[in-house]
Length: 102
Image (cartoon, rainbow, N blue to C red; front, side, top):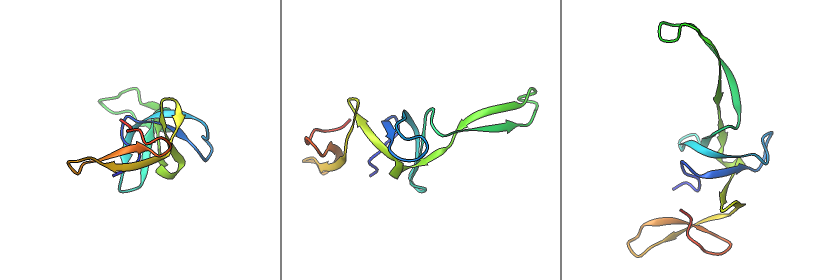
């Protein structure tokens, strides 16, 4: 189970985008990376086709390593731990105060 999931709000904690926040669009678990909305954008040149006769340049978000992201809960960065309920289901908790995240 990953500490960061789709739709989470995260902050970049290291790298060239340090301090920026965004919403996770997709988590690539096999590559240990995530795509975050509005962060790490690159311009991609699109060739004109029948579907897109204009072509042009499109900005696209690229993935960021999960180790460079920190989960935000209620506007603050939190350390994430895991707990298990009575049914054996795992859930995320805030390590500082033990509150459930989600």
